[in-house]
Image (cartoon, rainbow, N blue to C red; front, side, top):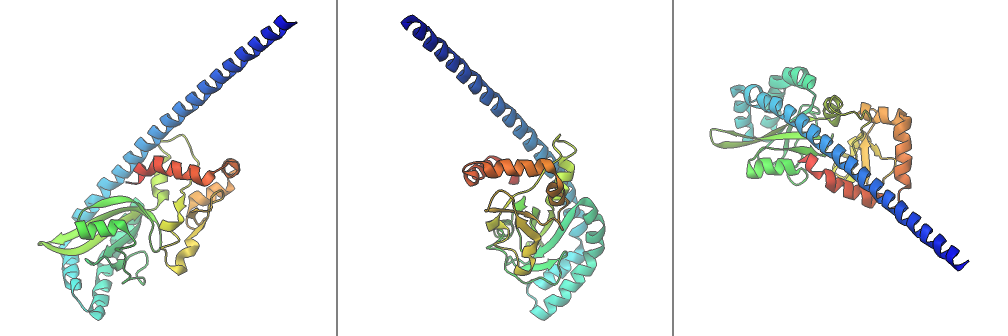
Length: 280
């Protein structure tokens, strides 16, 4: 009997060791697949944002920075507020056809000029909202107007978030401010969907870079994410991606599984660090 129990214990030990080995190999295989998918996503994201970058830089250099535009910006630099309002109207008339035509067809949602002090000068997507200080709220605007360097990346805003391409404007060695052309994530996702097999995407945005800085009357542009309290998503009225995800049984099930995970906020923070390079 003693030998029987010894043999049984030995077999049980072998079984547990084999089961542990299989489980470890399974986890290793899953992680390998995740890393592979992450590399594909990273490569695809970089390709899409670089593609937009080339087109947007061409518009900036050869279409937007015309002598007539630069002349208005020279006049506006030190103009009193009453004169700035007139110049703002002239600039809007100068570029409205471009903004409402070619740029929107490219996927641009925001064309926004800033003063050399980092204040909003003219939002083509919301001309009535201007004059607010942005340099301490928007890192991209601070870099463009302090370091006078081009900067791109995803960033929240006072009205909409977006993937920003922000250019300093310097003419005849005079710093006139900066201009940004911004894409909605939907524009990026449309191109990503051509490269990726996954067809369900949603963009999570941290509250501190979205609802905490957005104008009070535009907070309705965001809604809570289903499974996390520290992140939001764009309102379904603004984003077809959000609308599609709400209607998707697959996304609904994934949200339920994520919500049930222990320490979900900690895990999202770890995922954010993993994908941080995507938003450079």
